[in-house]
Length: 167
Ligand SMILES: CC(=O)SCCNC(=O)CCNC(=O)[C@H](O)C(C)(C)COP(=O)(O)OP(=O)(O)OC[C@H]1O[C@@H](n2cnc3c(N)ncnc32)[C@H](O)[C@@H]1OP(=O)(O)O
Image: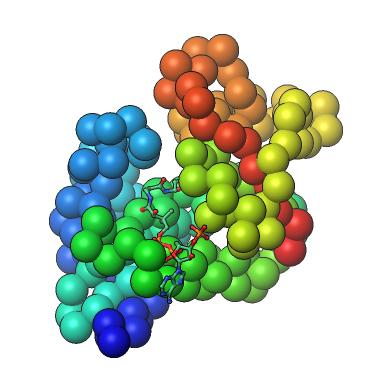
């Protein structure tokens, strides 16, 4: 039986492993690759899954508004897929979301079955009211632009499904 993953907050030395997890998925355009500096800046959003001292998965929670956050960069190494690592990471990130006080979790994904099993449903159109939409337009974050479905980021999000979960 495979060892259970330990889910813990990411630390700066994990950035290398996180980038290694993302690299093949970015190549196949499943995830967006970022510069190392972006991972260091966002390290406090990340949790990692470790098995026998090796990081085998990662995921992040990015807060966008008072009641809204996004699951980002959820990735499990090819050798460890289908053993509950992704599910354990997602549950930990949802717990973080509850602690922080957000109530709605967005994600943009090809993995619709996985997220559906974790309580997400597909959404169409805007998920925020016009006032919040106008405020979010002020963000420089590319992920927020993707959430807003802005024309300029549509090539990045082609084929992805927009999903939301209420906590
Ligand atoms: C918002 C974003 O970040 S979107 C991007 C999401 N990430 C990606 O698309 C990157 C590529 N995909 C991945 O890295 C992975 O496939 C993930 C992260 C989506 C899922 O990771 P996994 O570790 O395989 O997830 P997990 O094992 O919990 O569940 C996968 C399946 O394995 C099965 N499973 C779950 N737990 C176990 C277990 N303990 N033993 C055996 N099988 C299991 C389930 O049947 C599950 O089925 P489902 O996907 O239909 O729900």
